[in-house]
Every structure is written in structure tokens, then in C-alpha cells.
Image (cartoon, rainbow, N blue to C red; front, side, top):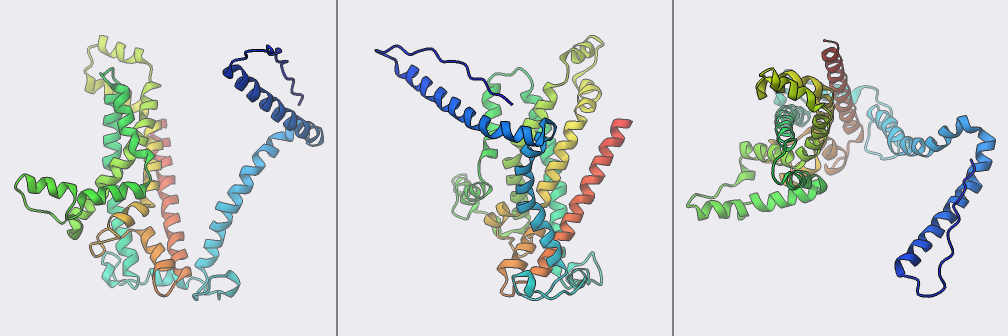
Length: 347
């Protein structure tokens, strides 16, 4: 791989503008960097051949993936079959499936109080409820917002920025902002008092706490999925809508006959990503409610965190077993959604 650099014209000796000097400086830096890369890449290319250079460029990503993803995942699976409270693997005794047996020890799986690890099952049921309403509401609102923002409306660029802005914020920052708004002496209660209404202690009522957890997560994440759906909408040829208008089709008929079928692959991606993210909900809810009131907003990831790190007795094996179960649930849901999307494409 030979890198040829274009010769730069000579700079005038006097009264050279600042922009020209900066341009020449950055160009020389670029030229020097390309020369260094060429000195390294050319011998490497002769050694491994041009065909195998792709593996060389992929290798850093594979190393990072192996160190920070694959190895911790395999270590977590190993911890799931060990017991004790020791941290290092060599100090942990092998107990087989005892941790999984402890989690699944229930007389009635529909009643968490009958389970030995009742907090896990409450977290699981809360997670299922959260996924159904959070994902359903967010996909519906994201679709509606994308359809509206895809039209020629006044201030379209501004509204696109407004809907996407919460995605740029950290979940912890979002939780702190909304906690300031919803607390007993917060902004919303101040507004209610101004209107002559009584204060509402939102985080001490289970129904209100669940509602606000779902609402805030939709508000914070829908901009990202709206952007994906908007890209899918813009890939649909406009001629199809014009032909439908000439045939006398209404907007609802055009949406059902053109938009939904052609947007289904993009919608499937949104559904898979949103489900995976919803099942793993933790940080935002942890800061907002701490899992309360009671166990109303305790989810599976919070149970895993508390079992491994927050409780007085740190049960790493039990937490690892719960995370393995959560991973299997995500795998099954993803495979089911992909097969459902494949069947819809075939149909």
C-alpha cells in the first residue's frame, strides 16, 4: 500500500493569512501521519498479503470485545455455578445448579410470596409489566411522531431537535431532573397548589410511581427510535403515495397499505432494540425511585445489583444465576421477534 502525497504550493514569504498558515500546518501534520502509517502498513501488507489485511484491522475490535464482553460473560456463567461470598474465582466452591434451584423454588410461580427468592420474581413480573407498556407506548408514540415530522410542517427541523434532545442526556441526569419536578415540594406540586389542588406525593403511591417511571423512560428514549423510524419513512418512494392519491386512497389507507408494510423491517429493529433496553432498565429507576414504594418499581437488574453488591451478604453466584436467566429471556425474545419479522416478510 503506497501512499502518495500531493505537493503543497510554496507559501508566500510575507503577509501570509492566519487561515493559510493553519491550513498548511494541519496539512503537514496529516502528511506526516500518513507517512508514518505508510511505513508501518507497507511491510505489514507484504508480510500478511493484501487479502489478510482485513483481519489485521478487525483484530483491535475483537480484542476489545473479548476482554470487555466475552470474557466477563463467560466468567459470569462460571460464577452462576459457584457459591460462597468470596470474590475471586479460585476461592469460590462449585455448587452446580444450586443457585438456579434456589431461584426456582416456588410453590406457585404466579405468587411471588410463595417463592424463596420472592424479590427476583417480583422484579420479573414488574419487568414484564414495564416492557409491555413502555415498549408499546414508546413504539406507538415514536411512530406517530415520525409520521408527523416526516411531513412538510413549519419548524420541522426545530421539532426534530426537540424530540431528540433528551437522548443526549444521561439517564441519571434525566432521573434527577424529573425527581426535582415530582418530589413533594417540586415544580409539579407547586403548580398544583397554585391551581388550588392538593399536593400529590407521587413516589409514595405505587401506581403513580409506576406511571412516572414508564412515562419518563418513554420521554427520554422515544427521540432515538423516532429518528430510526423517520429514516425508514424517508426511504419510502414518494411516488407510491402520489399513485395512491390518484387512486383515491385516504391517508389511513395509504398508511396501512404502503407505510406499514414498507416500514416493517425498520419497525422490527426498533422493537428488538427497545425490548432489550427495557428489560435491562436499572439506572434511571434506581435514581428516581430506588425501587419503591415497597417493591413497586423493583426490576430484575436491580435485584441482580442488590444481591451482588448492595446487600450485607454479597451473593455473587445467585446474582450471576439471575443474570444468566435474564440473558436467556432476552435471547428467546430476540429470536421470537426475528422469526416473527421473517414470517411477515415471507407473507
